[in-house]
Amino acid sequence: MNHKTQVSTLQVPLGHGSIISGLGLRQVKPLAAMTALTLNYRSNWDEGRTWWTSDRKLADLMGASHRYTRDALKELTGWVTRVKQGVKGSIYQLTHHMREPQDVPTDKHGNPLKFAIPRGKDGPFEKMFAGEISWKACLVWILLKAHSDFQTGKTHPITMNSLALWSRFGKDTVCEAIRELEKAGLLERLSKPHEKSVFQLYPKPPEKRPVSRPPKKKRKQRKTFMDMRTDEKHCYSFNEKYRCNLDTGHIEVRERHGRGRWHRLKDRERHLMPKPIMEAFDNMIAEVSKIRMHLRQALGLAGSDNAHLSSDSAHDGSDNAQHEFLSSLQLRL
Image (cartoon, rainbow, N blue to C red; front, side):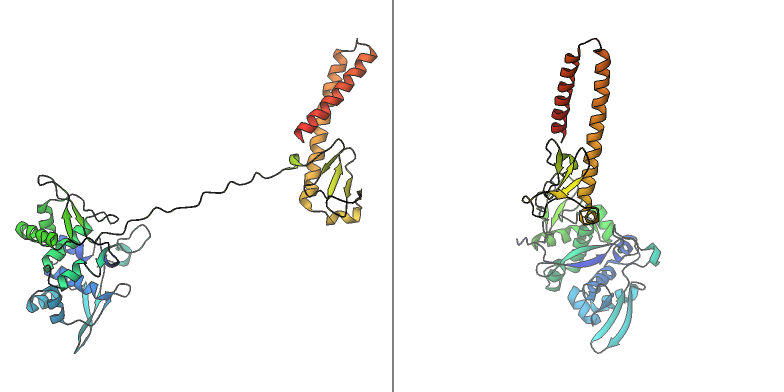
């Protein structure tokens, strides 16, 4: 048994207004449905135009009677329309869904509803064309495909009676078709005899490989003005070209990064200074001012509590407060 994975696919209409639905609703007979599906095989999906195909060619492909095939074509009014006729046969226009445009069933992407059938070597149509299976067995395979998981090719549970009603065949004919398909390697029964029938259809759809995505790079934490280097009197820009005096707010610059003497930035040169650096210096000065304000408030409260202490003690307290301020400033900066 040759269980290959499908290489190419054929699109087949599905849903209300399709030939599959028409068969189930008894609007067409089985041979007419198979004739429409064979013409669909021999067509351009986007345009719905078939290749040049004669009645006799259709009959030979399906292994059916020429007379019955002509009758089937007449039965397909609305789904199949002859648009050209010549010595090579006819060209037909197919209607995938015999519904008004606004009523055509669609998939999640808004496209007309359809499903895929394997095309090429070991496909059901190719085996029918080669005479390995009958057109009835091919039709049963297509119905099972429409009743399957399209990602795995495994059918949903179904009874032979339900399949017989859908295909409009007798139950014995359906069972014979299943045996044909098993022998041809087009399906494998997975269910037990007393359970609803579940089959694995072949050729199987290709397995979807898990998409391997590279691990996301951790974003570097963006530096803020609080990350700038500081000393007791200045804070420095990240490029070390500018520094700001925390007491006066004056900005100094040096010509070479990391080298050269500092000189006061002139007012006419301020527009040459990068805006992010200027904003960082402004934020730093505001933060330092806030810390100093809180410190003055804390010193004022401490002075009122310790008013009875000697001036020496008060002086010591101010030294401690100044040391605490510098320590906290260094920690925060």
